[in-house]
Image: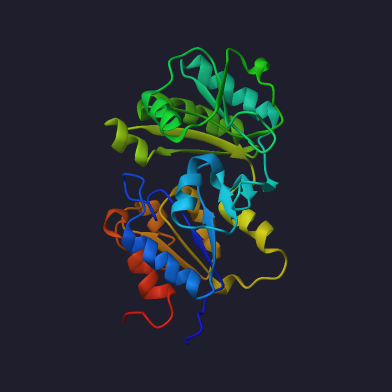
Length: 291
């Protein structure tokens, strides 16, 4: 048996393993099984919270750890918390105030291992239809409050943000970039699966703790002694960049934008054309590489 040159594969979900419909193809599933059969540890690293990806983890028979909420939390395969990085309460209040003043609902992602709801929704503005679809489809538990002061778990926020059209969120993001510099991490980007299901372009505004990213949480999982040259990662999004910069092999999807592709050691196919499977067979699974 040929020995693998990789100890760990870090795997993004949306835009990488999943197609636009949010599903795992049989080709990708078989490739993932082969990776696992070769003794390579698979670490799922996603922007979703654990509840939002549990059905995917079941589909791929994942039994390892999960880096969720863009690097804010580390859980085991059952969703039990191992490590986390929350947003400071003053940052949550600042972002919430800006979102509410702009006429949108603010979404606070909570640490569901200690809270009774996955999200606290702040404000009385109509919830964007993409959010409504997302929460209903995945059976996400919600608590709706009128003001931030009514949040019963202020110290357990993993992410604060909003969902709306880009032209509505961009002014908020530009304003907050200055306010949050050196204090928190801000991202704003297009949703992957929501627009496919709801028929319209959807944008996300997300704010995290300052040091949050998938790589820093992976370091917490692996501990002090690991060889980063034996870690491979595959992804497509802005929240994959720190990870892609640090690993021994960075694989980027064809559907990733140019900013992400800058950090690719190799490019693989589109997520709607089994690009994950292609990558595994070319660069990860021993004995199957192509020239």
